Image (cartoon, rainbow, N blue to C red; front, side, top):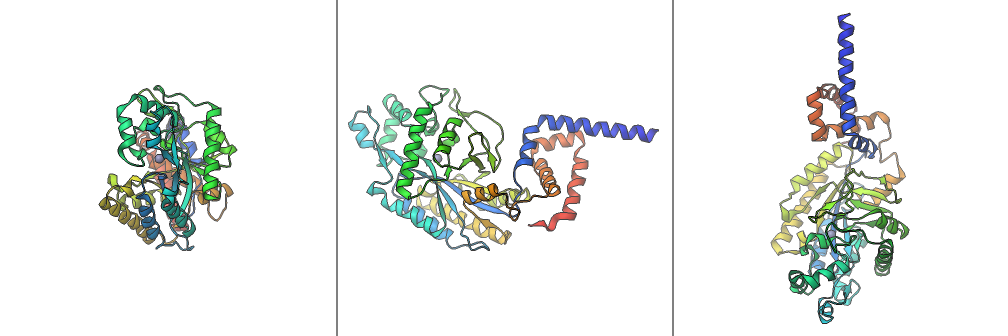
Length: 412
Ligand SMILES: [Zn+2]
């Protein structure tokens, strides 16, 4: 009788706490279950802001290519840096001549940018770059023009360099897909979006000879109207930071739907989301050891590693560039040493594989997926706290221990 009562109490305790934790973290838990479990470690460098802009880029791109082309995985694929291309910059001289009443741009097909174009195409041909659409410009031109009229500092920015660096614009202005006339920002109209997307996708095709498959929204601010327009223009995949920001709040900070996005998730627009899951910005102190730790953590959880690294790491002064390139090389060599079965892919190749649901690449067994889902749950510090408070960490750790003993030869 006492035994039965104890069993009932333990079972009640178990189910009540499961109910509370699942209720509180249902979105996270659902996303851990939904995200595909990869059978192989995957490493991708995702880099933005290249293209129209300072001419020094061509040298940095060539240096990056030469490092990437030194290494291959067991399938003879080079490591890939995806390049989020910006297709134009403001034409400072003409805008000033027009007394800030008319926006003028210089596009990436201008002969002055041909060394940059050549470096991009060379990298593409060598299989070390893949070109993604970052935007016709790293801002919405009307927002920039309004700021130029009213703000002395923005006029100063325009004149700082022959080709101004958009990285140094105020963050709100770096977003492309909002009307920033007032804060909080308001959405652009579908007509405005469609016209701009048509123009940028068309120009990308004209310049590189193929349509972009992947879009990366500047500052990760976008909405469903933009997605729908991209989808109508042959874009298939959208790179995200794991959540969607629709606009900027009254302080200028990105805000919007906080719901977690996972790799391979189908959006309401029909695009498929991909997720950058860590930063690798050597000029901000990120090291190769940190990147390798991220790779280990993601690999353990059956996730790819998409490291976000911006152009600014590679175009400041020579020391910073040398350090960034040396750290990049250390990540690649360290990753290959740690995981001989490591796969180098571009983001669209990874997304294609996820979409194909290929069993050689993605774990399909229910048991294996359940174990990985529990691992993902345990890796979430907030959920882990509740598992400790409730005592549910005991059965969870026993469960994961069984996995380690029975299934550890699976891959890594
Ligand atoms: Zn950017």
